[in-house]
Amino acid sequence: MMKSPEEVSTTAALCTIGRVFNYSNEHFVIDVLGESTNQRFIHRFANMFATLKIVPDILDEVKTTIKSDPYLRTVQEDIEKGRTTPEFSLDDERVLKYKGRICVPETESLDIRHRLMKEAHTTAYSIHPGSTKMYHDLKKLYWWRGMKADIAKFVSKCLNCQKVKVERQKPAGLLQPLPEPTWKWDCITMDFVTGLPLTPRVVDAVWRSTFYFKVLGRIAESYGYNIEVQAAFHPRCTGQSECTIQILEDMLRACVIDFKGSWDEKLPLIEFAYNNSYQATIQMSPYEALYGRKCRTPLFWNEIGERSIVGPEFVEETCRVVDIIKERVRTAQNRQKQYADTRRRDLEFAVGDKAFLKVSPMRGLKWFRQKEKLSPRYVGPYEF
Image (cartoon, rainbow, N blue to C red):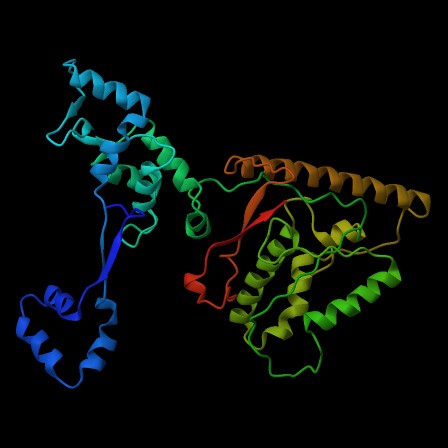
């Protein structure tokens, strides 16, 4: 049944609703209504109240508007003149059907198709199904030309579906490698690691972001540095810090398991081990890339003599090593981009386009004062 401006509403009595839901135990309803706890019963079963609406039948609307659709009107006139078709037919109520399904006309004043799709998508009995499910539900009773495309277009424009549905396709956006540093310490990235266990020693310090960024801004301004703040939970922006922190956390876990004790005591060892280990991107250790040689350890112990190159020769050798490192970084980035782009899809936006912002990966953050589990996956849309 479809609603129309001529609908008439009436409220069902509690006794009637009670008899419907408790048909097998009619005496229970009568006893409850006769007790003094009638008001409490009504409050407890308030959801059993309903509004019964007398609405015109969808078949009547189809019959009255069939002539507004030129294609269906021609088909119906041919059938009435005796020109039978194997697919179309008229039933006893003079309703045009296609293979037993009701033909829904395309009208301007009374958009029956849009009302049917809205009824099959947004009501409490459907709750936003996908285009395929919605199409198979409607095609059992109704038909019109381009029905599947219209349903897909209707679902794609549903705002709630775009906010809560999981994206079942490749991630959007090709990999954008980080810019190559031109020299040593040219670009410094920084990130904060939270959620670590408490340490036995207490350090009295102010590390809140509001205070820290003010101090950091003053320092950067004094030395002429530019600060670029990146989005959290977004490794595509801060991939350098995210990957390094992941490796350091794994090393810290292993160090605590092997050598026991508090984790803060192992930080100097973690820093030394990482800086002195081989990196596949530059094909050497960070220590060797910075100082020109590998740091001495009990496993790698070599005698250090006097430097054979000084002055301009040393600068020239340093520039040569930096060029080699930059070429290796460029080669590694091209290889990583080639691998990553096979699992991604290109997506471009123009000024004026709108997009949703994905917020579901942000664990621990609550949006709209709702529980994290039921918060929307996306917010927006926002205009570029």
